[in-house]
Amino acid sequence: MVNEIELLRKMRDEVPLQTDLAGVERRLAEIRTGSRVRRPRRAYRLRVGLALAGAGALAVAAVAAIQGRDGEPPRAHTLAVKARSAAAVLESAALVAVRGKAVEIRPDQWFYIKETQHLAHEMPAFEHWSKMDGTQDAVRVKGKLRVGEAEKGPTHVGQTQKEIESLPADPGALLRHFRDLKQERFPLSICQPNCPPEIADSVRVFGAIGWYMKYGPMIPPDTVAAMYRALARIPGVTVEENVTDGDGRTGIGVMLDAGDSGKAYYILDPGDYHYLGMKIVDDGQTVSMSVLGSGIVDEPGQVP
Image 1 (cartoon, helix red, strand yellow):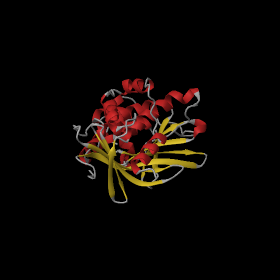
Image 2 (cartoon, rainbow, N blue to C red):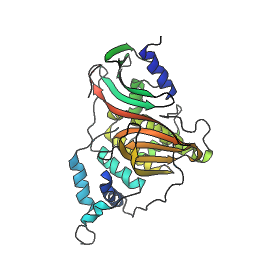
Image 3 (cartoon, helix red, strand yellow):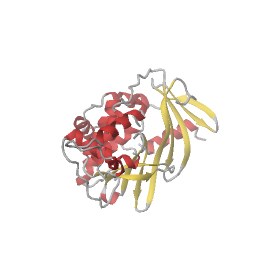
Image 4 (cartoon, helix red, strand yellow):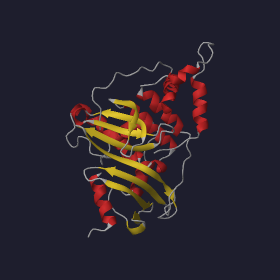
């Protein structure tokens, strides 16, 4: 009988503002760029965590965004406007993320994640711990903690941390970095390996960003912000409000149009924009992965 650690390894091999702040988000982007943010046309077909900030940051952003122009008084009703611009929403997410606190991670600590996977063979929520020095993994099974030798493959959390530390914090440089990756990263298979040429580059970059997003507590705030800004620059990316993840949570959907491959969503919390998970909808069928909790802890069995 395959033990739980081996089962987890096999599974990994397979799976290689609230809306009333939308007007604020659009205004933030206008202030930053000095130009009017255009609303995108509705996409025809769509397809394929992060640092937190206090409520004070959002409040300051809201006050700045609703100030009147040319001496006009502030207009409170601006808060009721719904933005449809990916650039505006993701710029707001970046402004929140960059105010997060960087975490120094020791080799003797563990990365904890609780997630669900709604794939061909649905799995219940499971908890996994990975030691940062790459020596041990642990899972909790039926209330019991099982600790074993760490996997040595390219998805180990220690290797992921090294990759994250090498990521540039400039969105343009980040896009170039992901386009040139030798080891492609995809959180779920997205029209691979035969993506249409016209979307192959976008899928490659979109997939790489999503691969790292679930490791949010490990990512420096400025790199998180660069990821959001890079997403906004990918052709075909739009946003949709009130998107539901595989566990019924509602958030902001960041989408990439992959044509006949269906709809792909990265789902962000509508309050602080941290990563909730992703899903792909293709021909009426949905597969998804959700992050229910994550963080850095001192020993297996602990939760943040």
